[in-house]
Amino acid sequence: MASARIHEAIAKEINKEYDMDETLLRIGTVSPDCWRNVETDCGVKDKYLTHFWDFRIKDGQANDYDEFYFKYYNQLSNPFYFGYLIHLMADQYWKTYVDTKYEVQENGINGFRLKDGSFHDNEN
Image (cartoon, rainbow, N blue to C red):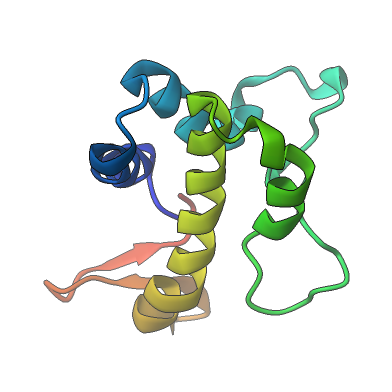
């Protein structure tokens, strides 16, 4: 998926139209990936919870941002929630249009081939 910097850049660009509190928007837009930084016994076990994963969908899913939208529709004027939604939508776009363009398998290892021709494994 996109890095935190990519998510922040997308939110910043969208915010030119909405003019929300940029700090709260940026916090919201990186929050879905904060599951990596919490204790394993706190209840947030993986990205499936923070990304509203729909287990009925098997292929091509990064999340279920529709579920987030319907759950928090009345909160979207809050920059944190709006940033969170931006993150989920950007991840789905990334999974649909970016990953599929650059994903490769080399010597049995899944990774990405960048424009400069270099191969990077899929660890991050």
